[in-house]
Length: 235
Picture (cartoon, rainbow, N blue to C red):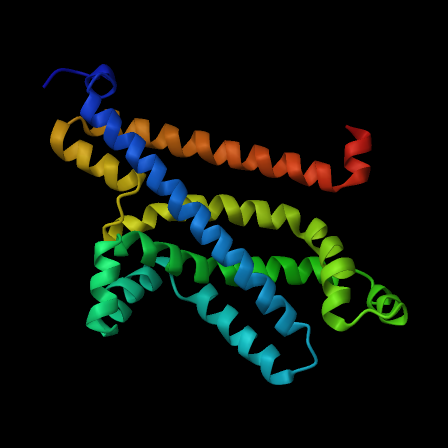
């Protein structure tokens, strides 16, 4: 084989198409799991801040499980374990609709929800308790006060760790290769098997992950600045 030659990958339309498809699937997994994680994190947050002790302990147990069991193991449990316990009709439907991607979204989303909920919880705890008392004095219910007064302030305070964990979620999408999801890492591996250009294709994969991670960080920093009037004024 000849020496280093990126053109052997970039000039091959089949390889480029595989990379593009892998990028598309990576963002489908990332966006789907991010939306699931954030939705569930908000629900967990409301439960944890409710007066129910049982709810608080249940959420604490959920967070503890997902923070202490490796994400890779959780993905394998969902795909190789729970998937096999489903009714045959549902399993057949999932198989026909890219079950690997669906379970990657579920596994990553449920896991990341634990981190998002703790980020939001820390942000909310930095909000003065007097805000809730003032909201109730104005006639807000608990849910109304959380939605319109407490959460907006808490989310703004929690943006830095939320951005960091959002980038981590994007990178963790590569773990979906273990269950056969056709994301970017899977595409890189397939191209390496076909081309035998190991260094070139892994270099391209590395650069792509770096670029997209930096773009996500940049977008997060922009929204964080827009959400903070003081930082926006200084800029």
